[in-house]
Amino acid sequence: MLSFPLPSASFQHEYELGMHVIEVKIILEQAEGPHDNLVDLFNSDPTEACRIEILGHKPTHFCTAKREKYLCVRVCVLIKKSSRSLKAKKMASKTAGKVIRCKAAVAWEAGKPLVMEEVEVAPPQANEVRLKILFTALCHTDVYFWEAKGQTPLFPRLFGHEAGGVVESVGEGVTDLKPGDHVLPVFTGECKECAHCKSEESNMCDLLRINTDRGVMLNDGKSRFSINGQPIYHFVGTSTFSEYTVVHVGCVAKINPAAPLDKVCVLSCGISTGLGATLNVAKPYKGSSVAVFGLGAVGLAAAEGARLAGASRIIGVDLNPKRFAEAKKFGVTEFVNPKDYDKPVQEVIVEMTNGGVDRSVECTGSISAMISAFECVHDGWGVAVLVGVPNKDDAFKTHPINLLNEKTIKGTFFGNYKPRSDLPSVVEMYMNKELELEKFITHEVPFEEINKAFEYMLKGESLRCIMRMSA
Ligand code: NAD
Ligand code: ZN
Image 1 (spheres, helix red, strand yellow):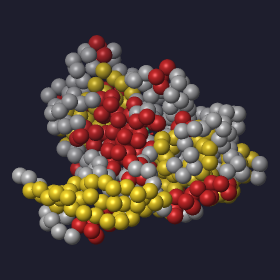
Image 2 (cartoon, rainbow, N blue to C red; image 1 turned 90 degrees about the horizontal axis):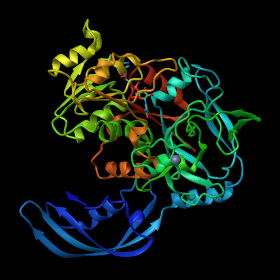
Image 3 (cartoon, rainbow, N blue to C red; image 1 turned 135 degrees about the vertical axis):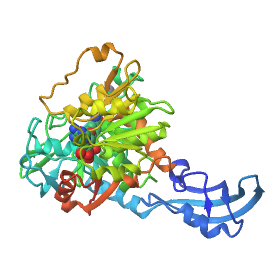
Image 4 (cartoon, protein in one colour; image 1 turned 180 degrees about the vertical axis):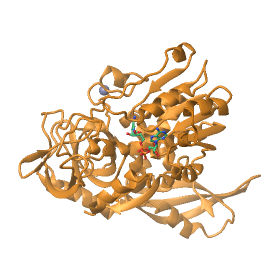
């Protein structure tokens, strides 16, 4: 067994293409025959963004320290672009500036199964990029707006906002991105110029903050999608349930090309949202107690954040008991099902914790859970963070004495992360094995079977269902 000090396949990121001599430190149990292992390590890039050929290697130093044996090796490597990256570049030059016809899953009516259609995707305009989506996932926010029960209906629409892909072509004025870049589109953006983008505290960009009612692009107030001339509306500026989509450059995070897109695509919304809600907004200190309302992917990511912050009690609250077994894997230590009690759940939690939890994070979208999440925090210092997207007509009702008693309530979009500046480092948390994403991905279906992903979520069976685009 040997381990490698750098994420093994990040060379294209760290080094230019071509030949390099680099020194690596290999921690090993047996100091022998590193060549095959080196080959495996250097070429374990599942996205095949680059290939690395080992031209030669030479041990320079062997050391047995107290805890580890390591071998320093000087390796001569040749870093080449993979055929897949080259293919993407070639394709871009063929399609740039032209309309692309591709498959997309169109929502024609609220609550009706999506229909696979051939759509026309117009080229990107100024400050826009056209992305080839490789993987997309389903988040509950898509489901809410598709059901349109408590939301403004806008149809026909292309939903989808959790995804990973590559840049196919860029519009005028785009200098930050180029064809072939690996990216995550995000439902809220970062123009980098407004007062919010310049503030360290805010990610609520004036120009590109989430707008669930807008179904068109900012540049010309029109959609880039159509079927036989009929426009199909966008959703939160991303519309990833399509093999190609057009997104404002400010809503695209360029990430390490070595990151596997079928895993890190879930960071484009839900997981970063939950993680950031805890780490950036609730900010529990070591040894504190945290209640998480809603144990879907967002809530479990919030629990993961609490675990990373060193919380000693993580209380999971959900109406669906099926969620409890899974939540154990995420460090949740205790479970409360509000249905098991004949008093409000906030009272149950206050009793369990001798006055209330230090922090709570609400990830349900239910207004009653939002109120409980606030009322269950300890007076004097407790902080509640709301993450769930409420219905259009919901109103938050609590007695003002709760605020006078020094309980704090906050809310957050996208866990306070700035998409372009911060998301690449969340991807690195996964690459450095601090964050496990595999445990959030419970299902995978081909894109054509997208309605199955809706069923899994509606039945409460899935955390995240990944859809693989076939083209
Ligand atoms: P999910 O459906 O997978 O999980 C929600 C969980 O909440 C379910 O397990 C459900 O049983 C539970 N729940 C519902 N009502 C409850 C109640 N009253 N008490 C306790 N548990 C209850 O959804 P998800 O994808 O994890 O998303 C969670 C929420 O976060 C949604 O509202 C979604 O729209 C929202 N969201 C917000 C942001 C943001 O930036 N603020 C980003 C992404 C998602
Ligand atoms: Zn801005």
